[in-house]
Image (cartoon, rainbow, N blue to C red; front, top):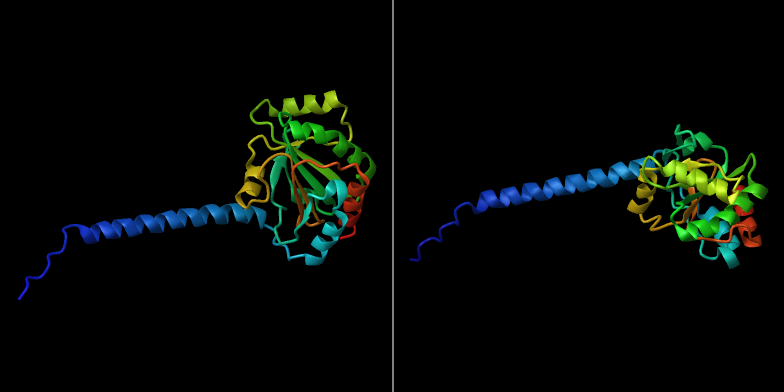
Length: 218
């Protein structure tokens, strides 16, 4: 009769340790994703298929890279600062449809896009719509760099908001909404995502105006 095979010493404890590590890693990952998603979903949005289709229909020609989404992502709790360093969230701008544009003074495509955004703001900004640029120049001197860039370019129709920590932009990267700069969001009056554009666009074109008209009508 064969002798029973002896169990390898310490195998069970090692398996228990491994299982515990796996559980801990999963818990950390869940915490990370939920934490970031919680900021984006602080004001949950219902899917808006019809609104996304309206944006897609308008996004042609110079705006062909813009995608209507309307998937239910909300950004009302997204935080940044104004030109004086005062904390602001998108909820503070509720009641306006928004073109939120993430940019930096060191970003060449951002710099090229800025004149078009300034012209769009000059013609379209009003009670029901706003071009909202959020600058991502890092560090304590980031705000001064952004101010100088806007002043030197004569971009008088664009307000200065900033996120010198890039926390807001990182939230978008977590869910693959944005991958680089510039990136733009079209948001409805509650801060719900209606469209996304990764890269620059000729916003002051006739197609740009049609997209904004479509957004205002949602």
